[in-house]
Image 1 (tube, one colour):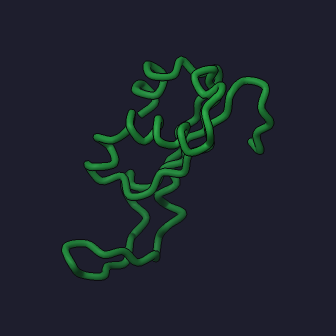
Image 2: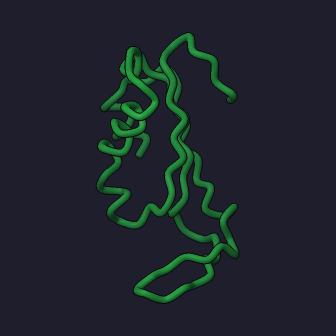
Length: 94
């Protein structure tokens, strides 16, 4: 994910954090059955990215752009993706 995001947005700052372990015990539906998630693997991520590519874009446009770049990962098993995009100079909480 880091390589794809770097190539697409040339970010000043980029952090891709695997948060799968934080979701252990949560329930999800797989193959029509409710199952408890064990927190292992790479299914829940947080992306923190600062890029001039986001200048002039709305929050929705930024999220759509990141989702488009990571569409293969989302189709292949990434269950949750928290996106925190910003343009240079914007205030971030991290």
